[in-house]
Amino acid sequence: MSTTAKATLAASILFCCGSVVGVHYIQNAEKANLRAGVLRDDERRKKKEQQQLNMKELKEQTELHKSLLETQKVSQLPSSEPASEED
Image 1 (tube, rainbow, N blue to C red):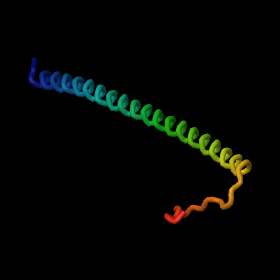
Image 2: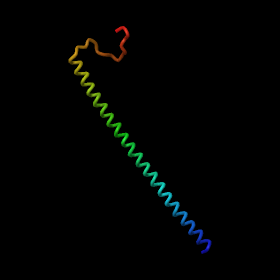
Image 3: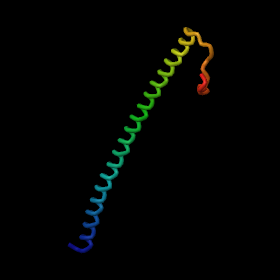
Image 4: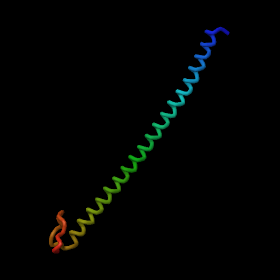
């Protein structure tokens, strides 16, 4: 076999091995990106569920507050200022 043929064969083998390694690397990177996307979606879904629960609880608390104001006599409505120590 001539030197040119040997060089061509070696270059072909190196190119083939490099292509296989490169394709595996790209597949692993894509798989990791897809998995990260699933994790982000799960986290986003959990946050949305928590927000819905918070809104439901806020609505319940608001309704309870209104009903308590209607049923109980309040001499002074609560303010946002902290209570003084004299009270």
